[in-house]
Image (cartoon, rainbow, N blue to C red; front, side):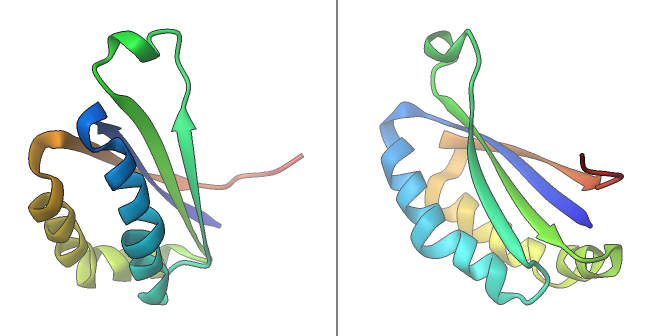
Length: 105
């Protein structure tokens, strides 16, 4: 299994709007691409939560193989990233990592 992890720092002024958008629009759009089988939205917990000027979230999209992830990156990623940028601008900052599941216990 492969996981496409997007970690996003969200400014407090748009946090609720961003979470609603993730639930109602963005995550469903990602799933509708057909490249992902499941998505998790997680809040990143740190000791410095109040000092960061916002909250951080990790969204993990699971796919069955690397070719599905590569197809998403090639075909869909640019359009969906642009949509987020147009809606929130610099009030959200994201970085992405690709993860490969080695084992579970």
